[in-house]
Length: 220
Length: 204
Image (cartoon, rainbow over all chains, first blue to last red; front, side, top):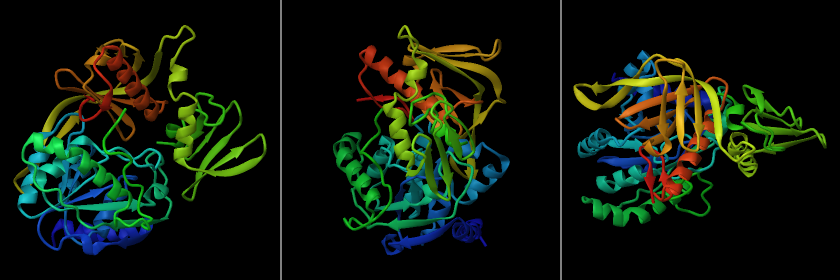
């Protein structure tokens, strides 16, 4: 058994222990071919919940600091297909790795807000995340998580069992934007679309959805 | 981490700092007590003996209305200066992360922590441990600011990375304070408004 499969089973058990997990919209995750999964980030348990909820295997960006935090994480994270992203400088290697995996037909999960929310509200999207999905040109599946902040906010060491919903939305297509000029032209529209679909993954006004992202791009 | 990291000053009266432990924080000035219980955040207001549900966003909004971290950092003569004790770590190297022969990316290795005092004013951030890690960097030279779990990291010229883990102060306070002072420094220098602080400072 591959480590990923094993840890996905573990993630399902842990997710069940952590939360009353509800999953909606699994059918929106492509059955084959490359895709980018964009997820809002409220809690450190989010990667576990998404791993448990997503019907397909995927790779996920994780902060590089985590890989250096302990020998266990240095061993564990590559085995759950985590990709180290240096957040303290522009990291061309992470773009190369993501594009290579997408070319191979794999799925990649990114948290376009870049870090966990302090207060449970949506955060602005990182500009680099939006540029990445414009460069990749693969289906972008929005995934909104709600309730994980109540289960374990960033500033607390204590977990509480809470009702958590993971909602996958219909895939968005932005096309391939190979040049920087093309990406800049498409940037604002793509940022708005992703932010709004993270808030309402299904696109329906009735969608209770997740926190979503607050604005197209970062601000001070 | 603790609730007092989020709620570093009193959302009710603005007193700074809040006291606290774990999922509870209380104000020694007005007596308000805030506690996280079973996924809810409750506030006890001593004046009218009420218990109310609040959200983390409410608390942050109230703290912002009181001036956030700037009030305590601003002195009577209008100058800004704030300091706290921290464990300071420098990145010493980056190691490649590979899996099944493929290069996934790079992860930083940090030097062991050194206790020091970190000070910020309108011009610069300074670190002083009386020895090896002493340094001072202009706010305009800082390349990126990011919060990483319990720490704040600064990218500095020369591809250097320094990490501050505050011993008894809120990383949230420092993140907001540093970003605010850097944004002000950029505006004063005519470099425009900062629109993003990581992975590099971008002006718009």
